[in-house]
Image (cartoon, helix red, strand yellow):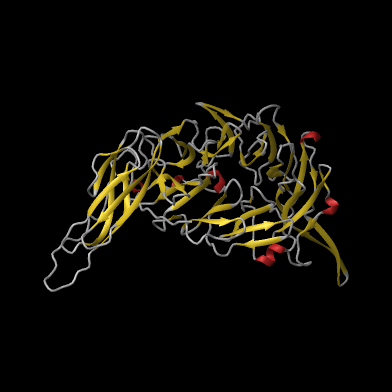
Amino acid sequence: MKRWKRLSTSVFVLGITLLLAFVSGCDDNPVEPGTSCDPSVATKMIITNPLAPAPGDTTMLTIQAEGTGCGNWAAYRWTAEGGELLQTQGITVQWVAPMDYGAYQIRCVATLTGAKSDTSRALVMVREFEYLLTGKKASLNPRFMGSDFYFIAEEGAVGPRSNDFRGYAVYSLAGTRVSKITDTGNATDDGAYEFDFAGSTEAIYGSFIVAYYSGLRLQRMNVWRFPTRFGTPVDASSDAGGTGILRKNQHRYPKTNMIGDKAVWKYQFAGASADGTKDLFNIVFWDEADGAGNWKTITTSHDSATVIIGPDTITQHRYFSNILPMFTPDESNILYFVDTTGVFEPCLIPMSGGEPDTLQRRALMVDQRMGIFEQAGVEISEKTVFEWNPSSNFLSFIATGNIVFFDYESETVVKISDLTKVTEFAWAPDGSQLAAVNEEGVCLVSAGGAVAPDPVFVRERPTDDIIGITWNNDLAEPKLAFRLVRKGKSEIDSWSSIIVVDLTSGLWAYASPTVQWHSSREPEQISYIWKRLVFSADDTGIYAPFPVLDDVNYPGKDVILVYSHE
């Protein structure tokens, strides 16, 4: 993969003229008689203002270069694939963007007498950019289910940064009409913190707070199923239990099968101990055909043994946790994780006739004391984000900064040690490779675990954030998109913008103007998948959740949904 680095200016503010800093050509100081001088010129970057012009906009193009003139000035000559260059020579020129949407390559060639010429290229995207009127304070996780557009936002009117925030809901957006899909019918605004979307696009599952009460140490939570086309919502778990007054049962982290008629989730039974040490953490299975509340517990999380110590006979209890259940892609098994050995290890329960066969349950172990995760040096928690490879039966996730490929069929665990400090990744639609974000930038990793020698995008500054990486749909012209966050010395110097990387040419371009940003608005305690961008089906549009610090253009908003489109 060709490596291409294009730098940007340090300060961009939406609606304000950009301040451009550049090295104005080469040193033209006279050379002392009798001394030698080797002329050189090297172009560094092309700066565009505005970053992503609309059709017909006049854009300032500035070349940054450095070198030694040895008494001469470098000359700069510009060419453009489309539009009109109002000047073709100079450090700064004006370019009138074409009236047609698209990506246009700009070239600047620097020449200097006695030196080798140098060329820089930049990709400029001619697009529109607009804020989608969701009416919500925080709009996250844009996605298409079929042709319908969905997003996640706060339940009710209280935003996520409020102490009174009680969860999220799923909404659909059609034009300017916003409809809540996950409506439990409760009078109070009690939302969810986890959702799962059926691959058939027929259903959404969520784990919802039930009748929130501030005095509870453990709020009651139930799993609901919401049809997206036909039918009525179902309180799948319908659990009003729990021992004691202050702690209630919780049903959390639901995962559904492809068509959305079956689900598994973690069931936390609130035990008799006020500190939770006697809580039971099990996996349950639910079939829509069985009706609300008719779920089956398919694991155990407690055992006991009788031991004799001197004259006394004592019963010793051991509690362990079962977490993060899911169906395998072919739905032949239920996969979950259990910490009976002190490390969460994968377990499988085969499906037989549409039901889990608990008699065939097995942990994937090396021996009686060690599982395959511990042997591979892999640790997970309930916060681990799992994703299946789109075309294979292996699971991928990040553990201690490394990408891990886990194949439950061959019982192999591969930790990609050549890539460290990974914060997020996204699979290409065909499952052949993934794009991973780490401290250097964006790197490609094959499904076989091979890391490309060079990043496809390099951070200009170590403090830059790369968030929400995603792939386009048409891999005949592969592209990556993500949100770049540039952290300045103050709020007014900090901004966020969409970046698109063309993997064919190796060039990248801004796909939106900059939006004022501050770390206080960046969503926390959510999966990075909720921050992920998404391409429209024809790849002409990009939807992105943008945290903002701009009460003038976006009053009362913490996270907006923007639409960058051709």
